[in-house]
Length: 191
Image: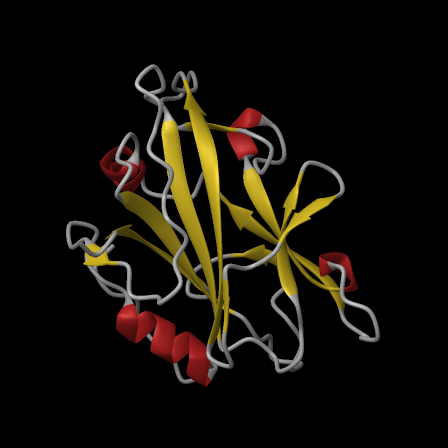
């Protein structure tokens, strides 16, 4: 993954996302003020992966949260007019039989070979007084393995998903999110 191709049919946020995609070997420092401190991994744990979901150009006034388990919601650590960011930690188990990463933990939904994270918005994110009730599936199995391997076991690194937050109908992102609406990159905490 070097740079995705912006097409005329893409929305302006999608074109900006494509323009910001970086080579997988280029680790960027966390650029967000207010990024939560990444918890150091216990010495006996060698399988944690920090993930930051950044929703770019979210619809005005819509609340976002990540679903933990069936009903619990994790709110963002940063919300501005330009972006919403939510940080989670996943556990990595032994590789799957086909060699893919085995994402585990309360935020990982679905069967092992098709793991994803739910990004909820509107009433599904606990917001009242809104007409929006949406949920987006952020596929974990689509993350390039070299990115996972490069960020796993590193308390100062995370994988960031940059997600176009507004659909063509003006509402929040929903359904299965695929490129070019999403781009993954490894980021490191600024010293």
